[in-house]
Length: 190
Image 1 (tube, rainbow, N blue to C red):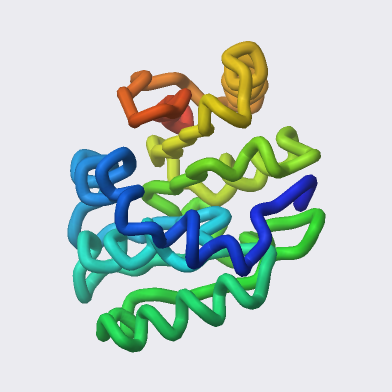
Image 2 (spheres, one colour; image 1 turned 135 degrees about the vertical axis):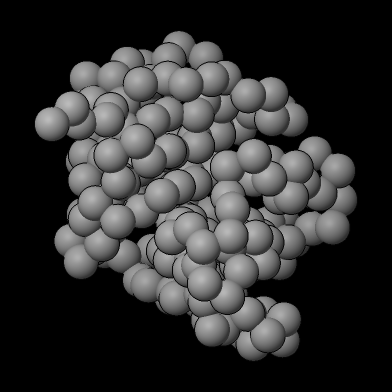
């Protein structure tokens, strides 16, 4: 699903930079969305800037599935998870250029995060369809895109695409220097 992805070696300088937490504090961004016992998904997880805080938030009874296109990103994340003693509830998975490989978790995800990565995907339609299938009915997807890389019209086009697939826009949270939206998978009435 790649278009132009952040190179793995920049992860150490950009993605894990301690100054980043002043703008994008994982705890502040995730605290209202991720709870103990949840099954959560981190798409384009990189070296785990959000994955590790998610693993802490879901606790021992929850789990985090962290997916990335680059094996070196996942290797770094696994190393960081071992150091933080967070390997029991964190699974990493390599995706392919054309699929997130989520068929085995269809309808099971409570919350998914796509932070600063949707603009890197050439087939946004397929990405959003796969995420929609992976989420439980009523599940949430938080999308945040950097204002420096993405224009507001592009972000709004992405939201319109998400609506056409079956997402509702629940809110537009303020996340530093980002366009963002919390989407929910429409609840099925049976």
